[in-house]
Length: 507
Image (cartoon, rainbow, N blue to C red; front, side, top):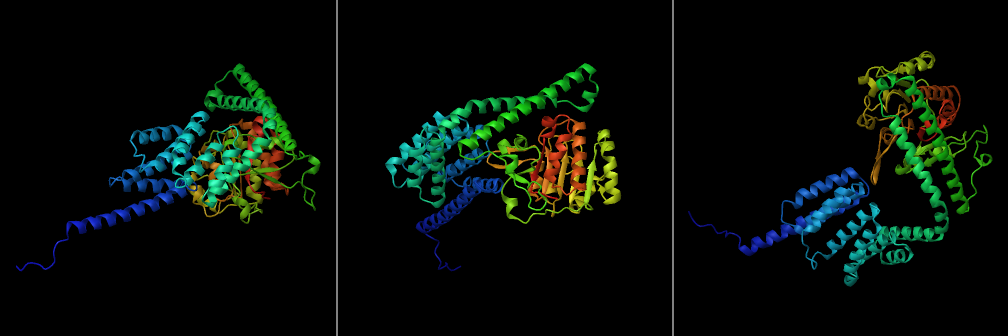
């Protein structure tokens, strides 16, 4: 066989091809890293997917700088979720590997900032300040190459220093991108407000600590009293029942005291800011009907467990919002009484609830053609054809209708979840809160009613019947009907204020 004219590639040619492919691979990893960084602040699910993909990519080659950068992104992801212990442990493992201070100095600064963020969220401010200053000491000699790191360090220091104004001004001056500049200006604005309001904060600090301690005591007591089954309660003696009710009445008075303290603090804050506290005479009303205009309040996840509705006048209707998103869409404000499905006592053990609500439900079936969702398999189709879904049972009904099924609904109805802790939200760090009421809101339900904590069944039955009667027999909005229904509870604070409404006004 004649020798081929094509010669095998030389060693130098192979090395050039390898370097070219390595550069392309590094560019792909860099692009994916930027995408993961963006999704860290916007979408937990997508951030998790990109981080897993990056970890699988960098593990295939010996790319220590990139693998270290991806590992730091994973730590930041856990910090944003509030998993401080896991983030601290992973960062300790990363920093145990020696770093070349010449070629990886910027990555070392990033890790110092991450360590400071962990200490900041853990409330160990002195350790956080020390970590930020370490990053600053490494970055100053490298200015202006490390200008972005310095801007970030000064912005972080402004959150931990007693006098944050100077650090905020430096962060605003050094910021390179519009986003960083906006964040620095927000920090500076906050620092200036903090400086001018320090006197007012110190005056209210003692009252705030006292109110928060009372709030924690009340919540723990409610959870303790609710930690039993119906079978256990049925076996109690008359003495045990009297003692249990005595504790409930005491907690109702404690919660009323807490609401009064919070109201005083709010009024003091409004006066300090130069705002005249509201008066029932100044509340907005409709020009034609002279009825109160429903109000909305945006509640932080960390504060969602507090009954803020008790701070408003008794007849003022207030509904909650998880975000501003519902304000930018055309709301469904008119609800048809002929499109109602309900699920009452699906577990079969709330006999009094079924008997107490049966007269009104019978009227609904006769006059408005309501239908029941006795078959759990047909519940999804019932929800898709309803304007209102009523659930009366234990919890939020997630046992029968999962969050995934609610999320798949093309048109989610108004949900009345009349069960214990049906409106309870669980904090998920910097991401959106978790809970059944949040699932209905994200599925674009016009409004959701639920309970913040466990309540007694008889009071809940009275509240449910009053809510249905006021809403369907009058022209009141759902939030306004709820304000009247709360008065039917024998424990107006402990049980009445547990009922909250999320969403926009619906009639």
